[in-house]
Length: 302
Image (cartoon, rainbow, N blue to C red; front, side, top):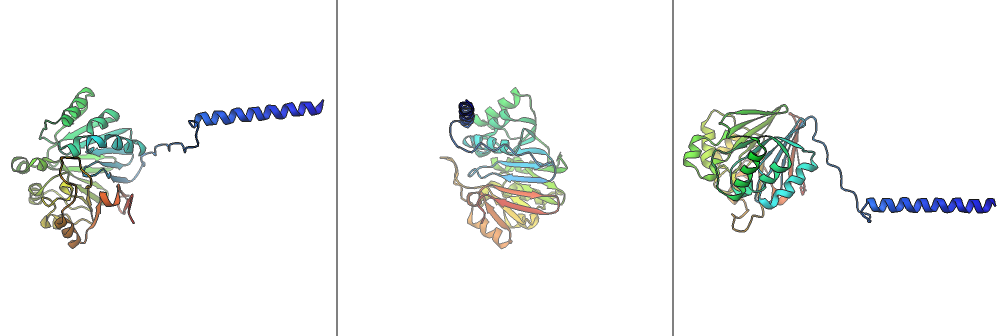
């Protein structure tokens, strides 16, 4: 009798184990795939600048003391990737979103970003555009009642303990420059470390900045217009004195400009001993700083 009872107890245990195994399999979708990692939280202190590798297009995530902001959102086909990247970095709210200008490789994914995240304020170039991507973005801004302004040159904002100042577009660039010279350019500073982010601004804007009283000295320069020869001239580099230069380049949409940077600009950066990082070569680039030290990591860096 004791033997029969023992056999029954063992059978019950085996049945229970089989049920638990089936439940685990159901939870894992019936396979052994690794569960998706939970999003990380935005660091409560310190600063990070993420320059996404999305081809010849701009999308830059800035994090400071637990706060987040975004500059541009690439082409329309980049939208899902940009949104996913932000979510994986723990972003739920963007204090600021900057649309540097209305070209499709900067504004294309912006409407989807604005739909997905809570946004404090949109800073937008005063030059309006008529593209479907631009109109879609404006519709989302209006439907969500997001504050939207075209900032004056010299306006200073805060993100945690970081500050950023709008440097462009100035009156001369808006009057005499091309559509790219309507780009919002900012200088972002955390402690003693700084980043000059130029959008697609060209030589007209660069000259206007050099002639102004605004500070343009920076450790990191995100070159204007994807490293093309109509931006990043010798006098400008001498004024900025960057340690690093980042070029957002690579594959572009059919019918858009080619994504290769100018050999002239690359040679000039080398002459100035600037460490040049191209997103088409090293992938997404992440700078981290505590206000004193500055480190750089890239997806495909050697």
